[in-house]
Amino acid sequence: MNIHEYQAKALLRDYGCPVSDGRIVLTANDAKTAAGELDGPLWVVKAQIHAGGRGKGSFKEHEAGEKGGVRLAKSVEEAADEANRMLGHTLVTHQTGPAGKQVNRIYIEDGSDITSEFYLALLVDRVTSRISIVCSTEGGMDIEEVAASTPEKILSFSIDPAVGYQGFHGRRVAFALGLEGKAVRQCSNLLGNLYRMFTDKDMEMLEINPLILTTEGEIKCLDCKAGFDSNALYRHPDIVGLRDETEEDPKELAASQHDLNYIALDGEIGCMVNGAGLAMATMDIIKLYGGEPANFLDVGGGATKEKVTEAFKIITSDDNVKGILVNIFGGIMRCDVIAEGVIAAVKEVGLQVPLVVRLEGTNVDLGKKIINESGLDVIAADNLSDGAEKIVKAVKG
Ligand code: ADP
Ligand code: MG
Image (cartoon, rainbow, N blue to C red; front, side, top):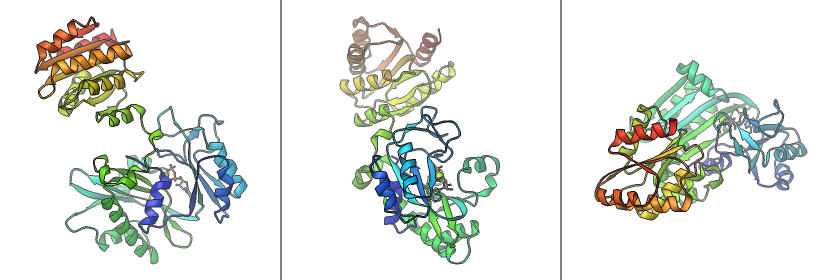
C-alpha cells in the first residue's frame, strides 16, 4: 500500500527526520489560508498523487509548456492560484501512464534553498533478505536517467538485521554523498531514524528523492515516497487510516475487498485461475501462444461461488479484455463450484467476449456438465496448452 507525500512527511516528522513545514489543501477555499500559515518568502505547491515524476509531468487540461505538478510561488496569492489551477485537473507523468491521475489534494510547503540534491532509498532486498540502502549524489528529477546511463553513480549496500542499524552505515552514506561538517552527523541520524521507521511500520519501500543539502549546510527530505507491506497492515491501523482508495485501481480494490489475489496487467486475455503457480503458468503459456494476459488472478483454494462470481465480474469490467480463459485445477477447489460461479456471473453481467474453460480435478465431470447444460457459449478445452491456444485464437481470429 502506498501513501501520499504529505502523509509520508508527517511520519518522517514523527520519527525526527528533517522536513519542511507544510499544509494540505483539499478545496480551493483552503488554499489561501494554508499558504498564509507558512512563512515564505518561497512557497512550493505540490500535487499529491501516488506517482512520481510530478515535477516533469503536465496537466491534460493545460497548454503544452505550462509547469507540471510541482510549482514555486513567491507570494501567498500566487501559491493559492497555483493550487487552484491544479486541483481537480489530471496530471500525467511517466509513472501514471497516458490516462494520468486526477489531483484531489495539494500540499503547500515552505520552499528550500538547495545546494545539492541526493537520492536515498531503503528497500526490502528479497535476494539477501535484508534491507538495502541505495544512495546517489545525482538525486532529483533525472534519477531514472542516472540509473540507465551511469549506474556506477548509484551505491547500494544492505544492513544485517541481526546487527541492525549502526552509525557506520550512516557515515558510509554521508561520505558517499560527499557531505561534510554537521551534515555528516545529520545524515547518520537521519538514516538511523529512517531504518527505525522502516522496520517499525513494516515498510517495503522508502524513497527520499531529493534529499537536499541546503545553503545553510543542513540536510532535509524534500520528497518522500512510502510503500507498506500489505500483509502486515493488520498490525498498523494508523497506516491503514492513510489509505486513499481513489488512488488505487478500482479492480484491484474490489479484488482486495473480496480477498482475491488480483493484479491488473496490460494484455487482452483475462485469466481466472486457482493457485498462484498455476496462474503464473497460465500467463506464461498465453504468451507462448502469442497472447498477452490482462491480469493475474488467483481465486485461491477455498473459493466460494460468490467469490468466483466477483472475480469474473472484475475481469469483465476491464475494457481491455477481449477473451477470458478459466483454468482450474480442482484440488481443494471443486470444479462444480467454479462452474456455478462462472454461470452466475455471466447471468449477472453478460458475456461479450469469447470464454474458454479448462477444468480438471475434483468433481470435473459435474463441473463440465453444469457448463454444458447452462446453454452458455463456452469453448471447452482439454488441457492447459489447448486452452491457451483456443483463447488466443478466439481473440486474434
Ligand atoms: P517529483 O519527484 O514527483 O517530481 P519532487 O517533490 O521530488 O516531485 O519535486 C521535484 C523537484 O522540485 C525537486 O527535485 C526539487 O528540485 C523541487 N522541490 C520540491 N520541493 C521543494 C521545496 N520544498 N523547496 C524547493 N524546491 C523543491
Ligand atoms: Mg521526487
